[in-house]
Image (tube, rainbow, N blue to C red; front, side):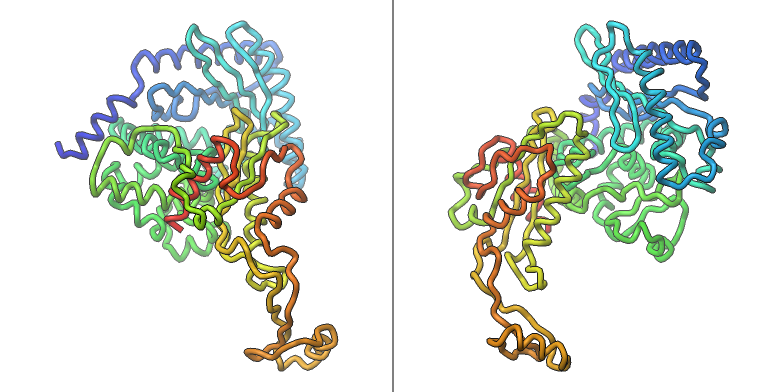
Length: 484
């Protein structure tokens, strides 16, 4: 056994769920399935199957201590499609939302009224589902119950899914049927590695979204084992993984693949890139850690620990002058954290674009990078910015029309009598709206902040207030900027 194989073996001993854990999960699944089936009979609701999906379900790729359950309830689309014939996409989406909301409220939530359940809640970003906590003597186990249309593979291949979750049961079956137990353990190791890197799931600290469970499973499927994956991981940015054996040229011709940094196609749907949401930043940071692991292997790469807080005493005056923070508190618990995350990423992207260039497209504060870090259990969301030139001149040379455009030249000269000629264009000195990034940032944030957020601080990072903001600063400084 090599040193790396020994490390894998030692880590597995700590992360593979015990037989007792698996049996406990199965008991809870069966109890909830029976309650849902009984209520469906009472309400005369027909369904095709109730099946546990995800890592604790038919995939069986969960980590030790992971009890979160995803129960999927299949509906026969044939019994509903006449109601939706001829509807536009938007109208269909509204009608389906209405159907699922009705079933969530009258069927699923009503099935979970016993003492062993706590806080049944209706949640949705796009697709309504129910989340509930199952109470045991020592644990609160989260259960998500999701309705979907039980479609054949042929239907999905020909028409695509009806809802965003219709592929999920087929994902589970694919992993169940195509990965050996050894490969499922490699999936566990890979998930543990991504989690230790803080690059996993929709709460990834590095980038907007990290690697998800299905992407980890497919990576092991494509590469065969974890060590082979690690050795080839650096090639992922230039080598698409396509189950359907299309050439790179064919894949690049698919419009919605063209802006994706990584391509890992879905065996269930040849039009879907499983890696489309995976952040370039998460990939690059993981690639760096994998390189270091292969250079000098250690179990520490699989140890999950809290993100460090930036030590402000190690930032000299010049360095800290480039960092700025926006500290926020979410005042509306009904807004899902992914909605908050997406809105704040959009805001930060706008700040970056507007801060880098004047409205005339002339250079402003130079290169700007940012990272968002949040803890939805605390309702705290923080954005940290790195700014190349936080203080700039009050005026700048604004480029005018080229000398060949006689009509525009005349107009420009009339408006700007103090013009100069340079590099084949007219130029004029223009006054900036902002010459200090902190002033620009404060103004932009106050004008554009989503209404559910309370702004608790906007300042240079030397004046940040919360522990979370210190973590956000550490992430940007150590886990993002070195790899851009």
